[in-house]
Length: 329
Picture 1: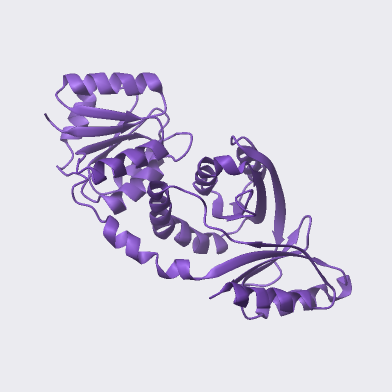
Picture 2: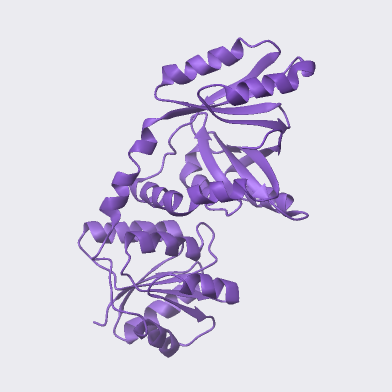
């Protein structure tokens, strides 16, 4: 056997052709239709002591695109050779893929000999060498804090700026944004305990000219072990640095409140989380809602993002609250 290959492609015919073709070439091939099923396969194989020698992944898929999978795989399995395949690529995508260690790129359509040749150009490696243990320990401190969102309406408009400034400087407030939507201000409080966060909200509730519209503690999304691990790795490697970068970029920032089917939370959360324009995504109200922030630059870009969110299976309603920049961070 030349090696074990994991294939990720959302087109059934391509999965079948690649599996048959690579098997005829002496490889063992396993095919997955999307990113989440591939995550499960890699982790189940690891638990059984089975290693993969190559990963072949398409870029454009319904849940997690191949470049994001590539980023996490290179953190978890730095020595695994990866071949990115696509029928809709361009020079920018190609350079992004090739910037990763031991990664190749192949445009569709191609013949099996072309695929085998591209694989043979990569340096030998496998999932036997894993950095997962190091990643698990890195997130422990982040999970110790308690957070909650508070939406506020200002009843004394003459004191709007005074109220905002007081909230913005209040101890325990991690984020405070003036918004245009169903409410006037959205606050994210963070503390070492639920009582500490509750005390912050009680202080806010006692302010003159303030009406609390809602209070929603942030919950851990109900994800299975494999997907949760994948999300944490991606957040550390890509999402958290992107939050800082986006805050410094020009463009429109908006909060989104997404009503969802809680029975489909894993699929919905991962799909929303991995949209490039979504800066962060939190779960609230017993898995019935997501709250997050999107960034957009360019005419019509925000409408496209909102349409994309509304098209996700299990999403019932998407509301937007555009951020009004009152102070510099």
